[in-house]
Length: 219
Image (cartoon, rainbow, N blue to C red; front, side, top):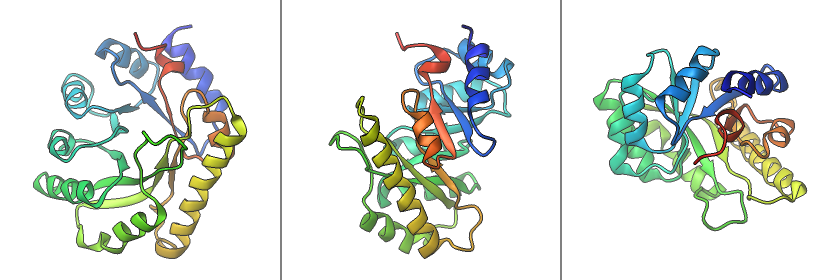
């Protein structure tokens, strides 16, 4: 199937309140252009310099989401244009996003990345660390916390994946009630990838990050 067919197949399966982030990391500009021609406007990348290069070559109405682990020294490459950073996993990185957003006279939307998987290699916050960051969020005029993100364990055990997604959604609910009850913009739950997005949607995801099912396996 073509990229266009793949996109339309996934879109049919997603409820209206769930947005599709087409994960275009490692894919050439031509593949993104094909998805763009099929109507896709939200793309996710995990390397700051690669994303900045693609931004220069592609239409300006693309909404770029940064979905990988973000090093502080790379924030400057994406701060002029990024729409949403999914992967805030420390106060240090949030401070740098705020600094670079200020230089570009922008407010950048961010998600707090939680560690929900059993794999130690995954990045992410625990609840205590997240609350610590939220406690000082008013010091940062150029970032806006709009939700949470997490990655489930890479396992065929669907019950485990579901438990982890439930956990992330419960973190979202706790934070919403405690800190963002009147904030309509705090509404995003970014979870679910090619192998597990249908479970994520059932558990309350608002953003699914799908690459392989759209663009094919990475070479």
